[in-house]
Image (cartoon, rainbow, N blue to C red):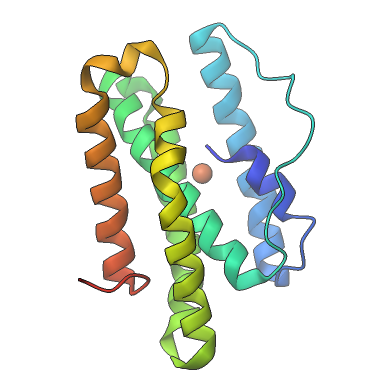
Amino acid sequence: MALWAVRSAQAQDVPPGVLQFLRRHEEEEAQHLKQFELLLGTSSHGKTALPRMPSQWRVLAVHLYGYETLGLEFARLLVRLRPDLASILEDEEVHVGFFEQEVRTMLVHGGPAADDTRQAAQAWRRRLPRTVDRYLHDESFAPFRDELRRHILDVIDTRFLLVGLLARN
Ligand SMILES: [Fe+2]
């Protein structure tokens, strides 16, 4: 779901175990993209410039975690329509789990490092509604757009709360 972000992230300074995961992750996302293109009869080969990703690992991890949680929700929607594509959902669950573990590790000792991680999550969360709107822009979403938008934001908030990235207010 986040092929370009994952590709771009590999150019950043990330821990060695993470780089290995990102390489495999990229292959899986590329495979998903191919499946989507076949499904929709479209192609995204026009995209050449990689998105700018944060260079600081803790900020980058929060971004990837966020985008993967978003991807997971879209994979859930997809699999309701196409149960035969369940492998995409399984991959996304693994991706989310990996970054969730990284984020937990960053938060576990508290202190300024944990505060920075939470700040990065809040900044990412503030931009999320616009991102979701972009993803739901297609006319086919129109009848359920508001409900879907609310649902996706709620799911991500709940996950961020449980993992300790956001505080209950
Ligand atoms: Fe993913």
